[in-house]
Length: 447
Image (cartoon, rainbow, N blue to C red; front, side, top):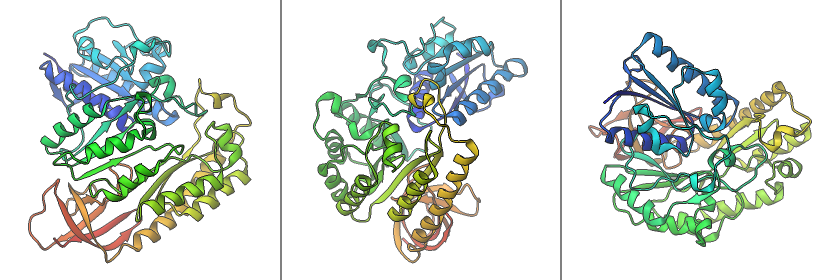
């Protein structure tokens, strides 16, 4: 048995792959360590969605490689998206790496630890039979806090967005069955998980490949009946088909968070067409307003890309005006990343990085004012909160999240007063909001 150090990078979908691998490692009897200097085998599960994530992954690999000379590391394994996308480059440029496992080789992690020779992925050249999809029988070792967990409801993507490499890395869209997901949700609830967050590359399309009409709605109805769960949220809706049945379920269920995460990416018809997404300002305005009518009090989160090839100042101003008009509760803004092997890589003219970053800052500054005003409107209200434990800001404060605050990506509630005795991590309490602090809130537990 070996001491294993594990580094997990990237999105929640990648984190779930890490948890599956950790479950397999633990089942084999290996010992997990958080001290990389003490690890005999180091595994780096990488991301390669955009330039920043590729750089972070490369730096993590190089840092892990140093422990082969100044630590106990005898074997370095690279897995995940970067391994799937650039296996030959890793093999030739990083000689310290002993094994390369792509996104469909998750189940081979224990063989790689033992030193068995495993052919690296063939850089986008797989057959359909090679595509991996985990299920409820693959018990995960959770990295998230014990009260909250992610569930991946599908893998891959069938969209052809011009800026995105994910379909080539992850393969075609393939859904898990409702039965498998319900079984996993029950397993998590039995372990004490109170909040589950459903993720996939396009959550809206769940079940379409299985011939299920309103697949996501059917899944939510089934998960709503799982005892022990208090909050069910889902991320990454694609703005194509948002059925009324789905919105009705979200609006009526006390368990399903009134939270819609829908990356719109842009609003200019010309830019959206080049992105291979379609739509325009009028259609997206109608969509956002429809969601808000159907789910009173909904928190609406979206993301936008600025600096896409050919984006003019006029296109950006239209986007900025749209965001000001819509007053999104949450908004993430990314400067376009020029990725090889994507259609947008060959699009012109390119927008200078300095201009893209300026546009990003401008849009985020506008959003900060909107978010600040919305937060100030919450002062004085009493709202349920999930207690997360000591704050990352100070040991003198507790931290929690409202239904409107998704884990990791949104702000938090800082709790500086509790007059009702001990408050435990993972329980639900009610707090009175006393102050808005940028993207976070300050409050006191009242019951």
